[in-house]
Image (cartoon, rainbow over all chains, first blue to last red; front, side, top):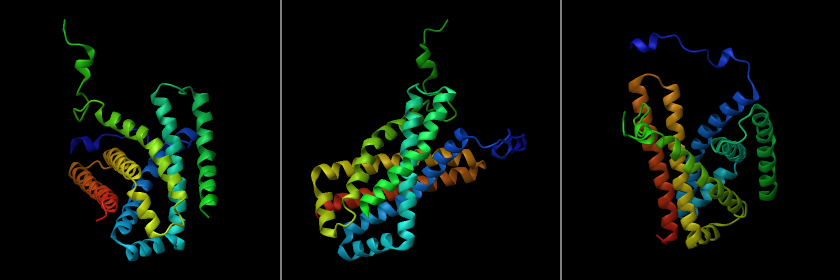
Length: 125
Length: 126
């Protein structure tokens, strides 16, 4: 197709990573990762509906080393996507769009999700 | 001079001829997911050591059933909208893009269907 031969605008590797761009990419990456996580959520609910044996089996998978590692990463991804999503909604409402505010809220979403994740895992332990 | 309002002119514009419908649905589901996700995560925190019976009894409470279905519906709807944008951004070959979008939507609707039916089955004691 003719359109495919057109030159592309400068892409990711041309630019120096900045907090703004990195957080934006991270929002998308966590979104995709969380979508994959819906597989486990659906499986877990179906297992709970199927009976005690199926549920026991699902709990075993989630309780395994790999299961716990994935669940931890999904918790972190969820809280990041959650916090940065609220940041996006605030922007959509027209607030916090100046460079200084964008960087300030950006620094928040770097550590708040980590703290929330640790709190959850300490409570659940 | 046209008597059409500016709103009428922009309605339904954009490459997909749907105006801002996709963008808006993404925001509406996001707003719904803020309280629903918080509720779901906090509830799960108190369920980590629960046995099968306790979990089923929890899901079967009418308020919990409704909130879970609302959560799952918003979640899968939001995921479909998000994945659609990702595929449209990175898959440039028309045929591959079309098939990827179709497969992604079918898979997520099936998965969401499974999850919601599972909740309803527990609620109605199937």
